[in-house]
Image (tube, rainbow, N blue to C red; front, side):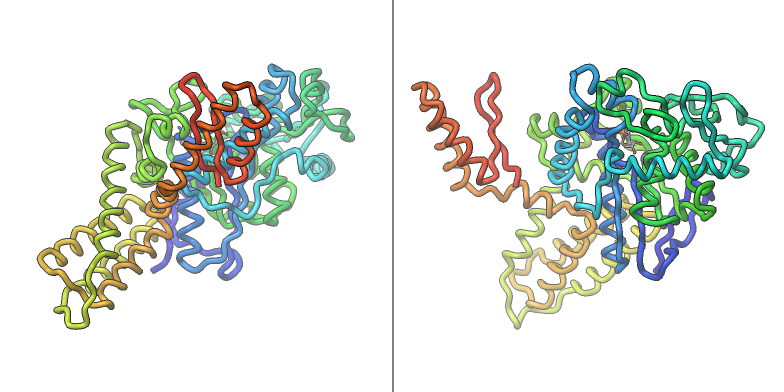
Length: 477
Ligand code: AMP
Ligand code: ZN
C-alpha cells in the first residue's frame, strides 16, 4: 500500500513521495507561547504526532521540526504587560506545552526552534530578499515583502492576482484573511519591543522579525530548501503559509513544500475553539476535572483531521469507555491460559485482516477514525472467538499481543493509559505520608524541614501544588 495525502495546494489526494528516498523532512507550526495551549491546539498537535508515528511505523526515516513562536505581536504584548522580557515571559508556557505534550503521549520531535535563536539568519534572509528586489524598506522603517514581485503569490489559498492590493502594506502578524498585501518581514522596533528584549540590530535599524519570516528561516535552516511536509492548523493557510511560500521560494528559487497538510479546527458546542473567542479548555482543566490523558487523546484523534470534531464531555466519557475497553482487552489477553493442546481459533485471520484495514485506513490520508474502527473490530471479534474457551495456543496469544502493540505504536492509547496508571499504590502511600510530614513541619514553623521534604519529592519527579483546597501532587517524570 502507498500512503496518500491531501495537499492543500493541489486540493487533491495524491501519493506521498518524499524528495529523497526514505527520508521525510517535516516542519510544523507549533504554539505561540504567550499562554497555555488549549485542546483545540492539541487536536492539531496530536495530528502532527500521528503523522510522525505513522511515518516511522511505515518505515520512513523522519526528521521532524516543530517551532515554538516566542517573538510575535502577542508574546511581546504579554511580556510588556507583565514587565518581563519575551524570553522570561514565554519560558513557562514553552515548558507547559512540552509537559502537556508528554502527558498526551506526543513523541518528542527532533528540534524545537525558537525565533530568538535565529535572528542572525533572519537578518541575512531579509537582506537576500532586498538584494533580489523582492523586498523594500518603507518610510515607517519596516522592510516589506513585495507580493507583486512574486508571480505565484496566492497559489496556496487559490486567490488570483486581481485580489492583490499592490503596494498596500500591513505590519500586523495576523491580518484580514481576505486581503493580500505587502507584509512586514522586519519591523522597526517600538519602545515596547525594546522593553520586552525583542529588538535587534540590523542594516535597517533596530527591529524584530515578522512572524511569517520566522517559520521560513527556521525551516530552511533546519531542513533545507524543500520540505516533504509542512503541517499546521487550517487558519494558517492564509496569510501565514502563503507568505512563507512567497518568501522562501523568492529567496531560494526552489519549491518550498511538497505537501501542505492542514487540520480542521476543533469546535466547542458548535463554535470554533479559540483564545480570542474565550471559549477554550486546556488539558490541565480536563485533568483537574478527573479525565485521564488517554481519554483526551482518544477524543481528539477520533475524527479524521479534515472532518469536523465537536468537543463535548459526553464524547469524552465515550472515549473513556473506549480506552477502558482496550485496557480490559489487554488484561484479558495477558491473563489467558496458554496450552499447546488448545483448539484452533480463527485468530490469525482476524488479526491479519485488522492489521490490513488499519494500515489502509492510515494510508488513506491518515484516517484515524477508520484505523480506530479496525482496532475495535479486532477487539470485538477476538473477544467473541475467545468466549467459551479457557485456553489458547501461545502463537494465537502472541499474535494478538503483537497486533495490539503494533497499532498502539501509532495510536498511543494504551501507552498513555499505562503511563497515567503507572504510579503504584506504594508510591501513592509514600507521597501522601511525606505531604503530611511536610504539613506538620510547616504547622510547627519548621520551614527548613518542610522545604527539604518538597525537595525530596521533586527529586523523585513528584511536584507539589499548594492551593486553597490543600496540597495536590503530580508525577512529572
Ligand atoms: P497558536 O498557538 O494560536 O499559534 O496555534 C497553534 C496551532 O494550533 C496552530 O497550528 C493553529 O492553527 C492551531 N489551532 C488553533 N486553534 C485551533 C482549534 N480550535 N482546533 C485545532 N487547531 C487549532
Ligand atoms: Zn509557522
